[in-house]
Amino acid sequence: MSSHTHNHHHDPQHIKSISNRLSKAIGHLESVKKMVEDDRDCSEILIQLSAVKSAINKCGNEILKEHISHCIVHAVEDGDEEAIVELNEAIDKFMKNS
Image (cartoon, rainbow, N blue to C red):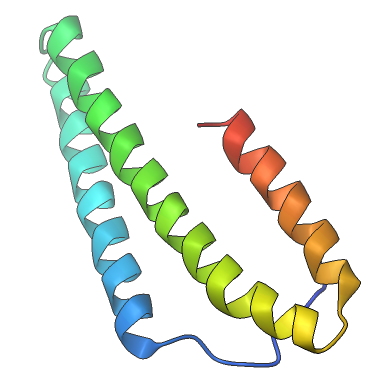
């Protein structure tokens, strides 16, 4: 995990939006877990898992867009080249697991 810290704050509405999306994904995942525990149809479970993965990927995309448009812009303005290296590492990890 990187020790890089932000020197600015994110829009509270954006944070709330992402938090709400993640809460919905968590709730959805909990319902998929219940489906497994209830021995529901495997195909149905896989479809629901796919929906959870999609929701998480959408959250990641929103965070990435925010990071580029705000964090990276500020980092470039401040001459922070380490932020670009960290962005590339984060994109690699995110895309590998998408």
